[in-house]
Structure formats: C-alpha cells, structure tokens
Length: 502
Image: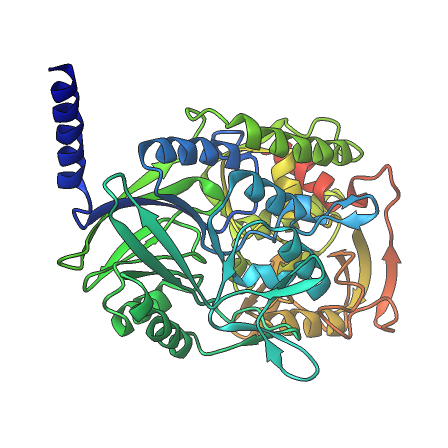
C-alpha cells in the first residue's frame, strides 16, 4: 500500500510539472541607467549613488532571476575622479569600470563621452571591463582600415559586437532569446573613431539579428529625436532604452516605448516585460525609480565606491580643508550641461565668471572662461558642496589678471561667439553684445582702450583661441597669482564667492 501511495505521489508531482512545463509565456526585467559620471551620491548625498542602484538591482534579481542591468552610454567621462592621478596615471574612468564590474552590469552601449579619453585609455578600460559593450555604428580607425573595438584578453583580441543576444529560461522551462541593437550619436569626432550612419546601421543590425531571436530591444545613446526616428524605422522594437539627454523621459512612437533616466543615477528605469511566444506579443510595464537616501547602499559595491571617494577627498583636501561643507543652496538648477555651456550663457557660467572677478576684488573690467573648462555635463540643484565645484571645474587652474588692448579683446569675444557649439565658446561676466556692438561694464568697447580682464589660465595658452597667448603683443601684462591668493585656483574662487551668496 505504501509503495502504491508513493508511486501515486510521484506520478502526481510529475503530472503537475508536465502541465506547467513550457507555457510559452515568460517574464523578465530590465534595469536601466544612463549618463552616469559620479559613482557616489550627489546633491549633498540626497540622490544617486551606484551602491544604491546595486541594492535595487539585487532586489529585482530576487524578484526575478531573469533580470539585466544596462548602462545606456556615457560613463567613462566627465568626472572629477577621472581627472586625478593615482600612481602617476590619470584615472580616466577606471573607477567607473571597477564599480560597474562589482555591480555585474550585463550590457553597455558606447556613449559619445567614452571617446573623450584617449585611444590608449579607452583600450585600458575595455580590457578591464567584465561586461559586454555593443554599438553598430562606431569603429576603431587604424592606419589600414576601420575595425570593431575589442578587448585584449590573455594576449588575444576579442572584437566587441554590433549586437548582443541573451537567453532566458523560466521555472516552467519556457526559453526565449532576446536580442539588442545599439547606436551612438556622432557628436564627438576624434581621430581614432569612425562613425557610421546611425539609422542605416540600426536598421542593418536589426535585420542581421531579428531571425535569430524572439524579440529585439534597443540600447542607444542618441538624441531623443534620433530615437524617435529609429522607432519609426523599426516599429517592432518594444522598447528603446536610451541615453544622452540628462532628464528622464518616456515616449511612445507607435508601439515603441523610448525611455531615458535622469543623469548620475538620480533615477533608474525598471522595465518588467512579459512575452508570449505563441502570439509574439510583448508587454512592457515601466517604473521610474528615484534613487535617493531612503535606499541603503549595497555593501560590496559600497566598499569600491568608498575606496575611490577616499582617494578623491585626500587630494581635494590639499586645496580645500572641508570638501563636504555645504556652501550654497539653490532651487533653480545651475546649468552646466555640455550643449548649453558651449553655446549660450548659463547661470552656472555667470557664477564662475563672477567668481573670477571676485577673486580680484572686482577690480577687473570683465571675466572670461572657455565653456570647455566646465566639465560636469549636468545641472546642480539643492545643496551644493565644495566637491560639486571640483566636479564642475575638475582641472582647476589659476585665474590670470591680464592687461589687453581693446582691439584684441574684441577679437577674442567675436571668436568665442562664433565658436558656439564648441569648447571655445566663452562664458562671460560684464561683456555683452547688443546690436552688433560689444559692451564692457555697460560701456561700448573701445578698441583703442586698454582693459583689465580675468582669464582662465587655459585660455591664455592659445589652445581654444589660437591668437590669445602671452606671446601676443597686444597682451600687455599678465599677473600670475601666488599660492596664497584666491585666484591661484579657480575652484577656490568659486567656493569663496558662493559662500558670500548664502
């Protein structure tokens, strides 16, 4: 009797699982972040922090083992940490790769800022990364030809793919192959990168992969208008996880969802996806998750973050005694985004140039800094501390007090205006153009007059404006501040100025 009962029990269990086996329906989860330059929390610790993102990641994995973590481009640069030196070598995104390795990131897309670093530094980061990279339209230019970017592993070159395939299996045995395509905006032309046409390559990579998988998703780093065009070209993509813009958005073009999270992991998108293999129908339910102080930091990732933050603070303390001190509060975002800071006057640019004048007790006629020196590519809002200012101006440098002819000053200002869209665009204080005429301190610029101007030291080296250097005969004198002076480091000047604005 016992044997019969046992056999019946085993048979019932077998029947139960055979009934559940392969129902052709499967659920999986995507966790999306994009445009992350800071590994730790920002805005006085209130938002962001990759150790907090990892806590969310682990919770999603417990909810569904079929969970993937994505970075939709822009993470190697810009960052304050990336500019410091460790063992005589600039970090250049090494800290980010180390943290992302600890997070077990599943897939990343190239963003335009990945090409801010040199080819040599990018190759090091690729080699150090444990995660796969994809892009259909960026290639490495060599002397002979263009080839895919690659990782060097044990002396072998392993090419990065244009596409990526992931297989999921759920508890009842249903299997699915999921494909991913990616393209990057060609906004950062450098000698070692060849950009293919975004739309041609997106369509070609989709055609190459669609018959090998059940469903294809996008992981892109392009403007939202470009994503919308891709959605029209590829209407069968259920979801495009995008980057490049720094504020969250959620759009739908036909049946294609386009999602972007806030920069620096202030938010992350959680996409819970249901796929029916019989009907080929995909349902995406998305949740914008705020990454804030209510989320505990993951211990493993937190240790890596803390290691790098301690390295950073040690170096900052050589310049500023208390890096964590809140120096300014603002409800109005201070705009340091690349596109804006390199094409128009912004409130952050005004603060920096006012600070340059402040460093000389406002005994200058105007103050000028090149937009390319402002490297945060983000907005500052809420509590701002000294570290935030170092993030804005990671390279520091002195403020020079320069006597210059009006004629040369006009040439400089005209050049900066024409350079809109590049790092040579000039953020200015007390220098405005009205009806085709330049005004300095509300007085029309006189080309025969001598002006005293506060310049960033970088500008006076002729890098952005070729004719502006101490060698130019119309540069009449240059005052180089001493170490104990506020103007010795532009960041000290900004911090000191903001403290007076509380």
